[in-house]
Length: 468
Length: 146
Image 1 (cartoon, rainbow over the protein chains, first blue to last red):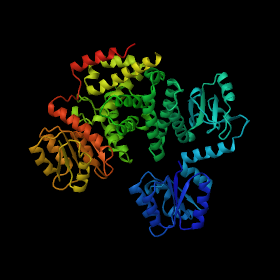
Image 2 (image 1 turned 90 degrees about the horizontal axis):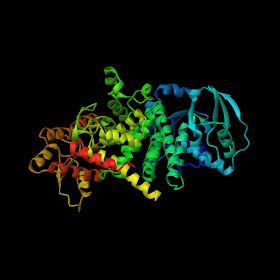
Image 3 (image 1 turned 90 degrees about the vertical axis):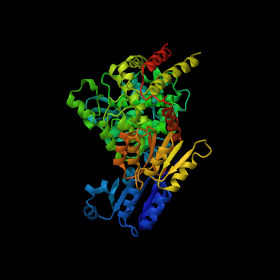
Image 4 (image 1 turned 135 degrees about the horizontal axis):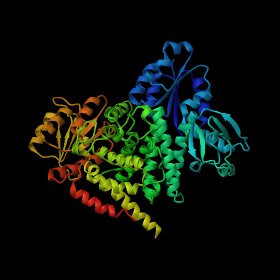
């Protein structure tokens, strides 16, 4: 789908040229020469981003920015200034977030840089389409580079999928800090070359963290295709689902909830829900991802899967609600400070002081989410996801019907996921242990536990049907 | 029985229109005080209320309900600038918050709330598992194993 960009600049020559340039990248460009016209177009259309000139008149740029903050705070705005003096005047280095702008540029404007920053994932996709139509480069030579390990993300080689064109620079690790660039962005993909590395025992591929935003978008795209394909195995679907969650979780925790991030999270939630609907062997889908150091990222992923499974077996959860509940399950631990984002916490092993600090995270998460335009539903789930029906939960120590009903779903999904990860056992074994633990079950809503067990039974029956 | 409490008459009426022809008896109230007087006269399965209202706002209305031990599911419309009220309301027990002005999902939420509300009135609503549930779960569990 073509995305719309609004160029708000009093100079028709400038907006004409910029518009021509962006149209080559398959954007649908709209132009406005006054602030008033800008606001009118913002009211009439949904834009991917706005390029706003600071010297626009008849409603100043500040008035337009205030209007955007009020009506669509997630809209990406790039501010164009005439000189570095204007940057100083506005103290933009300190104020740009307050003004609600994503980036700013002084004239003369470099179109490439502007387009790259304003467009994010969409530019990337447009670029891929253009390059694919031109045909990629081939026989590009490998190159050894020295780059800090912290700049990379790892992807299992078996979980990497490429189209005809390589979308990201791909590396293999030689040793700490030393990498071999094996595919360059824009190159034709060569399956044989990748197979050679597999043959040499390479198990992981490395990508630059700066590409994560694009990878998130790319993997959502792949994930959606897989969900709709009957030939893709449950195992392949599962590893792609998990990898997509990994990209989204890591990006969310490091860069926050910006608009594309939320859009991608919602797409991921839809793909996850559809994956759970499609998959027949639930055990195979969820059981092959244990490692020695369970992380919050794994927990977020499993919680989302089980939230979806429970929702699909509760008669009162509709489609829109399921989306919200799954997104909330992914965001449940957003209140934990950054240094606690990695390891999954076993509350039974915390000191009283650590426990008191840890138990603040639902309220902190709620407050973090107040800064974003999200459904109140999602915030309430994050706030109540540790409350128990018997009143032994936190942070508000409420019980029974006072607990936000959807939060009870996420509580069960999250607790079950936590037990799977901490005990390092398969889901069906942990389900038995969970149900046999009176203390655990008596603190839960019975309809939700019933839905969880029913989910497993239905999947088992559908798998049996398939085998026959 | 559904009670809609909102001082914006047009909005209240458009919400009630969502359920026309659904065999749901709908009563409108214009603020919290009016809502309380309706609740004193009749038993409702679900209440939908705004937060900002004259005379008695949605939060005070909810507090009054809970003080009178009325556990009817309450759905609250939320808008900008009511964060503190929302936090207070969430402690008192809300069935769901619906974002104003979209009201997306309201219909589905009301049906759910009505179902729970009826179970509360009949005394069949269970918010936490008991011994009989444990036995049922054990039986169900057998079906998950190979």
